[in-house]
Image (cartoon, rainbow, N blue to C red; front, side):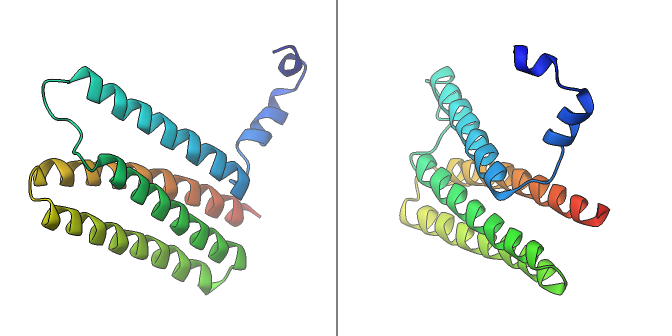
Length: 148
């Protein structure tokens, strides 16, 4: 704490509002995923009488986590290359992630028909939360690119 007192506030703003580098994204992404996992466990223990998480929740969690990371890496690579490739990589990354994740959840719902609605709700909540985080980070990179 003592170290932070002497730093000017403009330095702190520049340090924490700058471009979302790859290392910084991976750190924040893992912290976000950890927070989501803790919330899921808390919900599971809070509502023990009713099913809040499907039996395949952790598989869905890992699949959406991995595909979101891959989509961000693809999009980030395209943004760094610049030009028209950046738009194709953004759309391509989001599309591939959506298609792959929907394929996995469709297989789970067809193969294990019990709790279809719960599995679908768990999937879409995970998918939209991870996608929201990814898009926010990508927009930070695009905003910084437009300012220079």
